[in-house]
Image 1 (tube, one colour):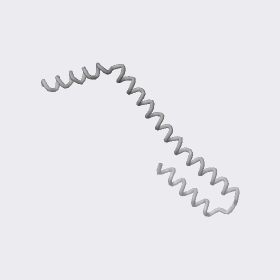
Image 2 (cartoon, one colour):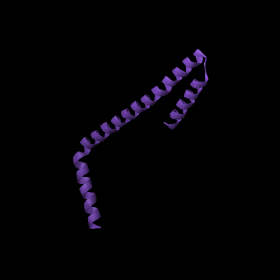
Image 3 (tube, one colour):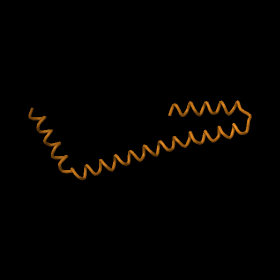
Image 4 (cartoon, one colour):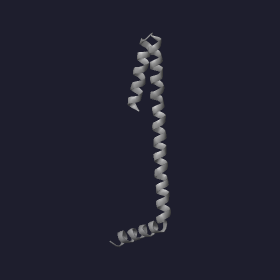
Length: 81
């Protein structure tokens, strides 16, 4: 995130210094690419989080009763020691 912010600042500075229309067009295109990468990253994180949630839900449904029994066993073992 910090790298993207510094890149946007550098692009803004370059934009302020240039007067050539072709250069301004290139800088605008570069800004849109940099901004779209942030959105892409957020989408990737959301997909990873959703995949982890599905795996956790599946594991809980598969081992639901076993997890409760295992936790009780650990609790008893710790209490008796």
